[in-house]
Each structure stands twice: as structure tokens, then as C-alpha cells.
Amino acid sequence: MQIIDRIRKRPPLVAVIRLQGMISSGPRGPLSDEAMAPVIEKAFRRGKPVAVALVINSPGGSPVQSSLIAARISRLSKEKDVPVYAFVEDAAASGGYWLACAADEIYADRASVIGSIGVISAGFGAHVLLARQGVERRVYTAGKSKSTLDPFQPEKEEDVARLKSLLDDIHVTFIDHVKSSRDGKLQDSDDIFTGEFWLAEKAKALGLIDGIGHLVPMMKDKFGDKVRFRRYGPKRGWFARFGATLAQDAVAGIEERAAFARFGL
Image (cartoon, rainbow, N blue to C red; front, side, top):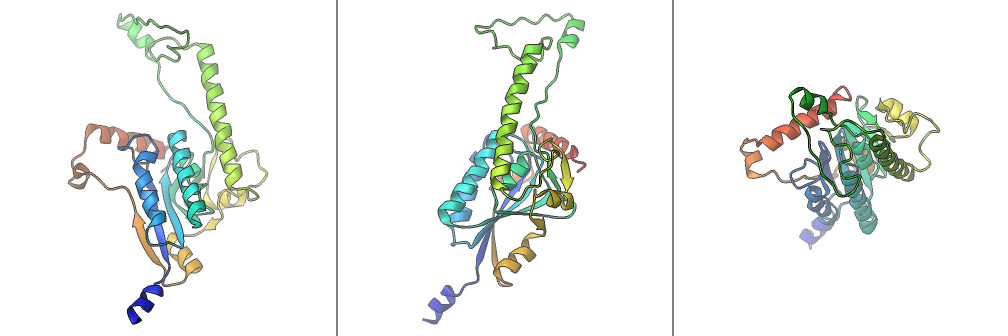
């Protein structure tokens, strides 16, 4: 009976999920729904946690993957009746903030970068270089829009207008997600949805986060000094564990470094 009593009186458990890096598709992506799904499922289902804490450090990435991951967290939170708290490290920007909005409450360090609620598409144009080298580009399509925004052809106004329309639609989806998750907390400011970003104190004043705080002290304050933490993250493969880096990983690392650099990080 004493053993059973001790088991019953175990301190509350908080499951901690790390959401680190660029958000992109596929199992090899630092953050994708495919890679994170089993991690998120385990965090909510194992050990009857009293809460799930998201540790977020992301400059953003794919809006679709951001939406899928956030939707999975929100769904499990409702199914299991488990509250979710987000804790921002260096940044929760763009898609990273999309993920943070899956939480009931968002906290950050004073130096954390928050926001960038916008959508971006970047590419390159190489048609002048090809022309200088005497290379002729030949493209044949069935369907007038199949070669839209071909980087090896001169940019067309109608292609740019179509792309901007798509970006605007994604932006509206992002805005709706933020307004829904931060209902009643956002300040009436024209700056919030412009793609601008701020440090935590200003983000708090705008209603983008709930306060300044770190994981362990905040969870102890809510659930007691004896609260336990169980951390979850995607398993690293054999190559990653033994330090071997593939070319694809190197390129991804450069892209992620560039994304963080946009925010001075």
C-alpha cells in the first residue's frame, strides 16, 4: 500500500517539446509535421502531464507546416484537456510565432524576438546571365501559367501579381490564426500584422505574448516546486549522432543561419 500511495502522490509532470530551427517539409526538415508528429503525440499521451510546454526557437519557414504542427498541438490539447504554455528563446518569428499561438499562454526572455506576422517569397533571376553567356532558354508548356515565375526568363507583371495575390491570401490565414488564438489580448495597432518584429517587452505591450518568463520558474510557480519535467524531441539519426554531415544538412544550416540573421540573431 505504501508503494501505491507513493505512486499516487507523484509530483505533477510537465511534458516539454522543443521546436527548434527552420520550419520545412519532410522528415529531414528541422521542423515539419511529419518529423514532429510522433514527438507531439508522445508528449500529450505519456505519463498524464498536467501541462505541455513548448520551447520555441524558430525564425519561421513553411506556412503549411507551421499550420499543421500548430493544429496538431491545439487538437491534442483539447482532446486531453491539457493546457499548453510556450516559452520563446531567441525568436518566435513568422512561422515560429504561428507555432507559439498554439499555446494558451506565451512567455519569452526579455531579449527574445517576437512577431514578423507576414509572408515572404524570395527567388532569383538569371536570364541576363544566360544571355551574356550565349545560352538560349527553351520552354514548352501546355497551359499558359505552367512557366510562371521561371527564374531563367524575364519577370512578367502578371506572374508577380498572381504571386502577390497568393501571398496576401496566406497572410490573411496567418492573421486569422493569430487573432483567434490571442482573442481579447491583442492591442489595436496597425503595426502588428505588417511583418514588423519586436523584443519581448514591446511584444507584451502589443498583446503578442503574456509575459516575461522562463520555463522552469514559471512551471514551478504554476504547479509547485516539485514539478517534474519530461523532455521530448525528434531523434537524431546515426549520421547526426556521430558528427557526419550530409551536403543537404549543410545547405539547410546555411539557410537557417540566414533566416535568423534577418532578426539580428
